[in-house]
Amino acid sequence: MKLHSVRVHPSSENLPREDQLAWKIAEVAADPVAVTPEVTEMVINRLIDNASVATASLTRGPAIAARAQAEDHPYEPGSTVFGIAGRFGPEWAAWANGVAVRELDYHDTFLAAEYSHPGDNIPPILAVAQQAGCTGADLVRGIATGYEIQVDLVKAISLHAHKIDHVAHLGPSAAAGIGTMLHLSPEVIFQSIGQALHTTTATRQSRKGEISTWKAYAPAFAGKMAIEAVDRAMRGQTSPTPIYEGEDGVIAWLLDGVDAHYEVPLPEAGEAKRGILDTYTKEHSAEYQAQAWIDLARKLHNEYPDLAADTIASVVIHTSHHTHFVIGSGANDPQKYDPTASRETLDHSIPYIFTVALQDGEWHHERSYAPERAGRPDTVALWNRVTTTEDAEWTRRYHSNDPAEKAFGGRVVITRTDGTSIVDQIAVADAHPLGARPFVREHYIAKFRALAAGILDAVEIERFLELVQRLPELTANELGGLTVTAKPGLLGAGPKGLF
Image 1: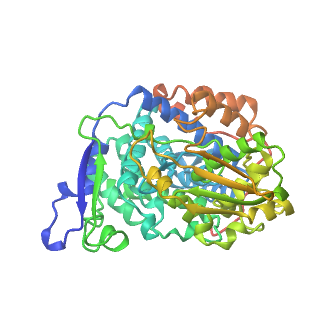
Image 2 (image 1 turned 30 degrees about the vertical axis):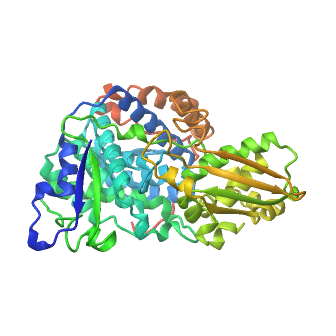
Image 3 (image 1 turned 60 degrees about the horizontal axis):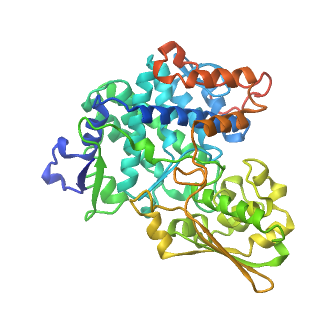
């Protein structure tokens, strides 16, 4: 990897294109380096993972509405949409599939200077692959690039510190991945990246307070914008330049300002794109920083069967800055303690999640969020006795660049009403590569089977699993099968809008 120095340049300096971050990303995307076998295997895993969580969300409101919008845009050759037959405009297919993948907050994650769900790259890249007649091998290359660029940007440039939503890194990464897959020139990819970034910067209010259904749409919008940016660039259209470094660019006015300086790691020419191997997926349907806490809570549930709500005086979770201030009591969001809050809000509330997992000894993507579950009196009483606090050591470990040290958990102190305490800690989720039960292919398949049960016919489940595991050898025609069709009669017509 090579570190690239990135800072703001006044227009008078006329920063050469070759020195701009967007151009350097484009060069990485255009590099024809081979994809390694382990990266290919992980790409397959994440395609299975995305299909799992998308299938589980097919009957949920945001997925229904987004799918209905796609259905109003049929197109040939077009792209497929999870749940239904037919072909649709690739930008709309990416939109519908992106919402379905994101809706349950149940797919992969990478956390560093910024936060991200790199699997959000897959819907737009796959949609373009189907529209453009790409092969499975092409798709693998595109997804490897999408993950690489997003991971590299996330390692170097914080967006949330300036209340910019993390999908601002997704537009450029998806555009780069599409460029790799289509074998586009650096010039075209460069213009695509600039337009994709310019159109996908938004505030983090989508993840603050009463979180709305837009949370699922935000990455889908970035993917849709990336596709449209590539289309315009292929037609010879240009982008704002320099998009990152310009005196009126993203860094100067949305991020760290005119005195900013970043060191962005990118693969050197001929170096394999391995970023996907740094990412991790979810065993539980909740914000990633909640994963380890769910595992610890269910462990404590089993170890202390007498730990009822009325025996607990307080629960204090000592954790990282991010966990405390974004999904903990440090956010100062009263909605995180509201039993009538939306599901999107509850899955960003560590006090709620830890309470329910401790009481139930499990976490389920539907049961654990049900209104009747959230409103249970003993749950509400205990929930209001759960707080978080920042611990400097856990914050340091959260930001560590050493994979063996990087952690997303912390220490919990449960004080009983009799004055005794239970103290335990966890560094990473059980499913993390360094966790108690790291996810491997069999776990991805098991997750798919579990989430598809009752939604897909058994024959459809097996068809998809057989096909996706042959990904590198798939022909363009076979690539159209990388979708799923729900059981007959399960999915009705969606709501109508303008179209």
